[in-house]
Image (cartoon, rainbow, N blue to C red; front, side, top):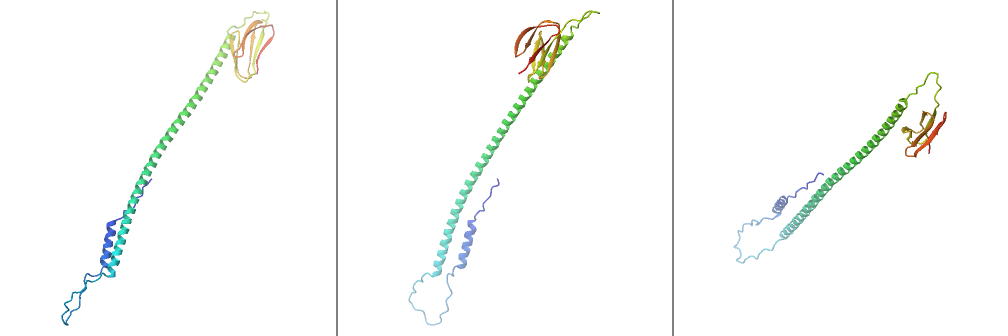
Length: 229
């Protein structure tokens, strides 16, 4: 904020002008008399002259100017006091502005920290989701390799080996993991998994839903394990 400077009152100039005005308006101290060629003057002493009306007017004007000078000096002092108060007020405003700037900077720092924390939480959630997906794909690959590791050996002209199948179907809205004879299968919502195996007893478990159970699969049978709401 730009501070305004008040004009200074030059008292000396005012007094000098006042003195000049009084000197111009005052009458002469004495007036020249006429030459007396007549008889000698009387020996009587003249009576003292009475003050004229002009002297009273000048004295009144001087008193008035002095009173105005005193009033101007008083006004100048009050004006200086008001200027001091105004400067103090400006200093208080400047201090308040500085404190407000500090508060705004602190608020911005807190907001930045909150935004950073939210981004970190989102990254952690995304990382956890990727880990789950990687684990599911790894389990599926292991299951596929386990099924291919024991190929069936058939003799020429031999009768086919009887088999049955286990069908796993996920009708739930979330991924589900099911183990059949110790092999885990993770199914996404709406996904199916067919397992061809020889007839006989097998054990299956729905992780987080159902404890391990044992069932007997007959030749040509299709046993369905359905996960639904």
